[in-house]
Image 1 (cartoon, chains in turn red, green):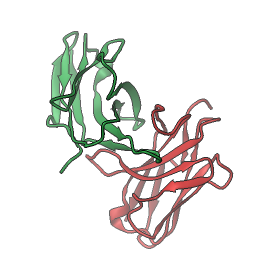
Image 2 (spheres, rainbow over the protein chains, first blue to last red; image 1 turned 120 degrees about the horizontal axis):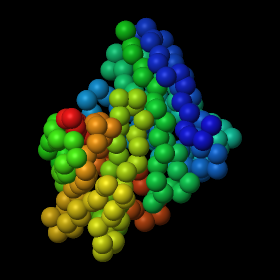
Image 3 (cartoon, chains in turn yellow, brown; image 1 turned 45 degrees about the horizontal axis):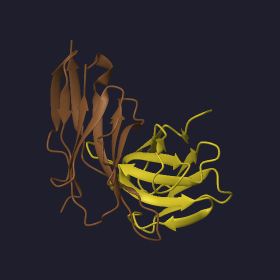
Image 4 (cartoon, rainbow over the protein chains, first blue to last red; image 1 turned 90 degrees about the horizontal axis):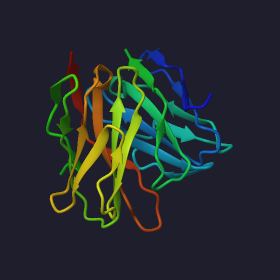
Length: 114
Length: 117
């Protein structure tokens, strides 16, 4: 497709389960971002890739969160031992250029931890 | 201190009228970018308009314009001739330029706009 694709759109997990969220960016976009959006809040930055290199992971809330982009295209955000406070929409965005380029967002993956 | 402040949790506007959504920002960088995004109920963030800190003219994109007042550190979004499809959450965001590193977007808490027929 032409846009950023995220899967699954909805995920319900029991507390303590591991989850993996996938992002397929726009072809040719070198930059990829993950954001976390809690209910009623604006998105908050989690991590940033330029090609396969993770250049900034300062927003990851704990060591239970891990992101990878091994071939510089598809990215996976993994959350281990999920907690209720991890419930949020996880947005992926890609950009042709990192600093001034417009971000194109996917529709997000809504995670609910019971 | 919040980097991006949107003081209007919700706004109503009559169809075909103009509406201004407020945004103030806080940064010590000289180089930065300001963005507005629209988020409909589907969840996708849709880019609307961008203003660079060195741009001398206010940005415009169709019915969207950005009222950039650098000294006041405000970047209000003006939507002219509102349409029912404009009903959504609107987020103001900033990217700070840092020498030698890539920036990331800092978002405000958003304003929910409702357009009345």
